[in-house]
Amino acid sequence: MNTTAPRIGLVAALHEELASVLALMPDEHKETIGSRDFWVGHLHGQDVVATLSGIGKVAAATTATLLIQQFGVSRIVFTGVAGGLGEGVSVGDVVVAQTLLQHDYDVSPIFPRYVIPGHGVSEFKADKVLSDRLADASNAVLSSLAQHVSAASIEKFGLQQPRLHQGLIISGDRFVCTTPESEKLNRELPAALAVEMEGAAFAQVCKDFNVPLAVVRTISDRADDEAHVDFPSFLKEVASKYSGAIVEAMFTT
Image 1 (cartoon, rainbow, N blue to C red):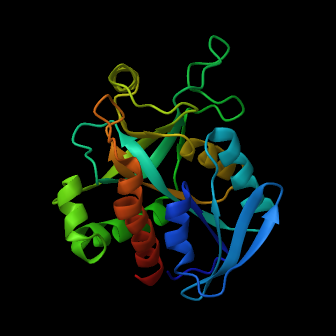
Image 2 (cartoon, rainbow, N blue to C red; image 1 turned 30 degrees about the horizontal axis):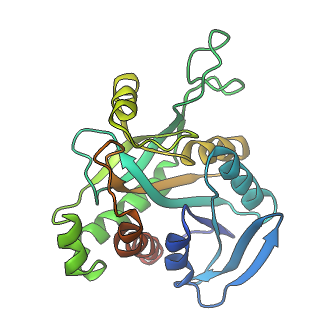
C-alpha cells in the first residue's frame, strides 16, 4: 500500500478477525489505554496500529478517538461482518461503504430524522481513494476465493460466486436478526446494503477529525429470521479469512 501516511489504524469488529490481521504483523507489541488493547507494529513496512472496535456505537466512537488522539493515525480501515439488507446481497458477499448512517438516530422534530446536529447531514462519506483501494483488494480476494477459504467451507456456506457491493451501510445499537426488523429497515432506508453496529460512529468521529475512513463488511446473514445459525463457524472459516486476506491485499497492491 503506497502511502505517505505515518500510521494507519486497522480495526476489526471481532477477535477472530483481529487475529487474522495480527498474524500479518511480525513485530507488534500491545499497549493498553483504559479498557482498550492496541497492537502497534508494522505490516509490509507500513506503521500500523490494530485494535478491536468494541461492540456498539459508543464503544466504536471511543476506539476511533483513541486511535486518532493517542496513536496519531492518519487514516483508518475497518473490517467486520454485517447483515445483508439490499437486494442481491448474499451470505459471503462483501460490502464496501461509500456512505454510512445511524439508522436509530432520531432527534425529530428538532432536526429531520437521521440528521446529526452540528453536521447537518445524515450520511457520512467514506474516503473515496481509500475505499477504492479496499474495493480493489476485496475483488482480488473474492476472485481467488479458493486460495483463502477451504473448499469444504465454500460448499458449506454456498460461497461459489460471492460479489462485491458498494454503497450505504447503516449502523445502530441493536442486533438486527428478525424479518420484521430487516423489512422495516428496507422500507425506511431502501438504499441500505448492510446493517451493523459500529461503522457510522467511526465515520462521524473521522469526520470530526478529518481522518479518512474505509469500511468493509463481510455478509454473514440476511439479518432476518433465516439468519445464519452457525455464526461462530462462519466467523472462523470465512469472515476472519476474508479480513486478513483483504487487509494484506490492500497493503501489497
